[in-house]
Length: 146
Image (cartoon, rainbow, N blue to C red; front, side, top):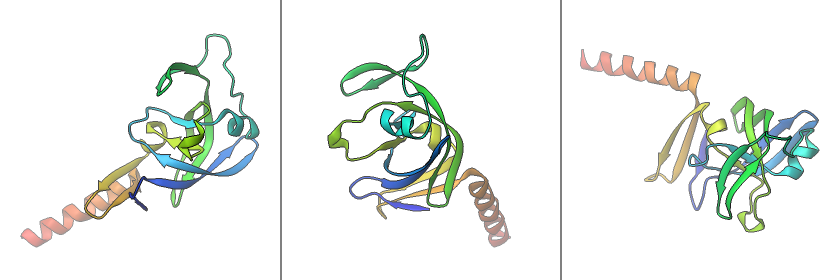
C-alpha cells in the first residue's frame, strides 16, 4: 500500500471496536510509541476510556506529561494493511490536529515501512508479504549474478 507524503501521511483508518466499526481520519506517526484514539471514539466503540486506579500509561504531549487509559482495539485497517489487538491510548487530540487517530508504533510494528521522499510516498507492507518480497528479490539477484 502507498500513502502520499505531501504534506503529511494522512489516511482513513477503519477501527473495529467491541461495539462496531468506525472510519476515522488518521496520521501515520512512527515517532509515537502508542496508537492514540479519542476518549469519545473509544467510548462509542465499547471501551472504558477512563483510568482505573493505578492503570494507564504515561505519554508526553505538547501540553506536558499525561497519564492515559490504554485499551486493546480489536482491529485497525488502512487499505489492505490490518492489525489485530492494537494497544491504544485514549486521549483527546487538539482540534487543530484535524485527525481522529494517531497510528503509532503499536500499529506500525506489524508492517515494513519505507519513506520514499524522492517519490513523496510511504510504502507500507505487512511483514509476511515483506519477507516474501525480500526472498524473491534475493533469488532474482542470485540468478542475475550467476
